Length: 100
Image (cartoon, rainbow, N blue to C red; front, side, top):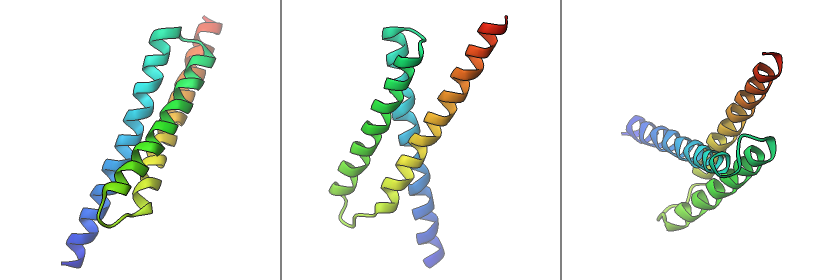
């Protein structure tokens, strides 16, 4: 029974991380679509997405019967991972466009 509870908690953290990653990705894509593939729109989209992920995680935890701060941390880890991936992809695309 205890092992099953651990599995459910781990799955819940993974889902929270993916939600954070998805929120940031959508915000960055919208910012790039609206304002172009420049550094400032990408940065602003990442910041807004991370903020939205935090707000969504806090709201969801407020709705739960038993709040768990680890879920909020998992959501933010997913958001930070998305920020990192988007930043690396942007830098590589800038280098490729500059060199070629």
